[in-house]
Every structure is written in C-alpha cells, then in structure tokens.
Length: 252
Image (cartoon, rainbow, N blue to C red; front, side, top):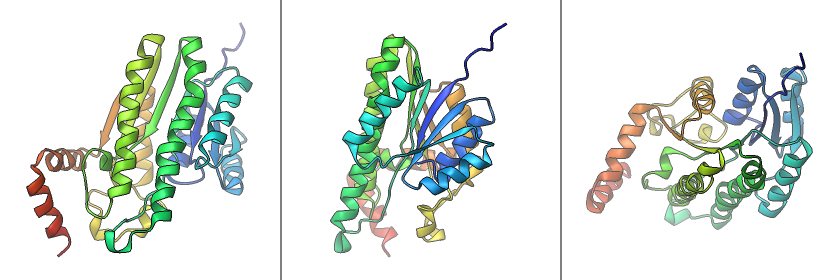
C-alpha cells in the first residue's frame, strides 16, 4: 500500500518563541514544516533539533510583495501547502511622548503587510484545490485598546478583522481560517516588558500546546488564557470614559 503524503505547513517567525515551538510541535505529529524567518542560522539549528524534518526558509515578512511572491511560489513547489500560519510579529511600546515612527512603521510592515502577504500568497492555491488551512497569530491586544500600545493594538485588530472576513470568503471553498489570540507569553518580545505589567503570563510551551490543539481541531478562534481573555472582553465593553479612567490608573 502506498504511503499517504505527509501534511505540509509553513510557519513564519519560526526562529524563536511561538513560531519555533509550533514548528517542533507539528513535526512531532508528522507534519513537514517549512520554517520561515530572517535569522537563517537559528532556522538551521531548529532543523538539526528536529532531525532534519524542518525546512529552513529565509524570509523577511516586512517586505510584503517579496513575501507574497515567495509563499505563492512555495505553494506551487511543494504541490500545495496544507497549513499556513502567519505568526511573525513585532511589538514595541508607543507612548506618545516618545513615539518612534520607525517602530510604528515596522509594526505595520510586519503585523499588517507581512501577515496579509503570507496568507494571500497561499489562499488562491488552497481555494483552487478545495482544501487548506490558514491561520494568523493575532493577540488579545487586538480586541481592546490599551495605553502605550496604540500601534500594536491597531495592527492586531487589523489582523483579527482580516482573518474574520477572509473566513467568510473561503469557507465555501473548503478552506479553514483560524484566528489565534494569545495573551502575554514568555518570548524575546515580552522579555523587554516589566514583569509586573504582564498578568497571567504563560510559558511558551503551554501556549504552543494550546495553539497546536486548536489548529488540529480546526477551530475558528482561540482566545487564551481565559483569565486574560475575560479581562480584555470586560475592558472592551466599558464606555470610553471608563476606559480612559482605567488608563489613567495604569500611569500612576
């Protein structure tokens, strides 16, 4: 009996954190993974750790047109990707008095343009085949406004809405869309934040396990951990005046 083809996946931002962990999680479940990031040396180390079962792919998603072209080409080269996870992300505090336009632009390039290009590079092929799974790593910060995070919240809100609308477009073609919304997770990005300002902080392995199970179950949306998700929902439901008052408390 012929061996059935292995499932294939592309994960961006796979040189560290959630992307790296998710690549290993999927490989251990029989998925052939293309791990994409700028830092090729780290991807090669990941390949070695995975016993050669990860394919390193040098890719800077901040270049949207190049990302779209590379993902579209990869989809053709491998005979169709089964899963694409737009995980690459960038975040930085953007307090108004020290607003760094370059940092804001990078958040837009990576979180908005890069994620969009990643997903749209694979979507037409999946629609044509009548199967596939598109996923994006948004954030709980994409569901409510938080002080000193205007650009990050906005970029993740865009990705959230893009995924929700994309789901409506591709569902009838047999393509699943999953929107992942983690709270604070230990990573290179969150290492810059004061520990006291990250409630319900999750270990990377815990977050990866939750995300992996949600992808295998083909869930439409995952918000976690539940404590942080409930807090974000509550803040988002408050009147604007109450939100400003809470923001003022956080600055004291």
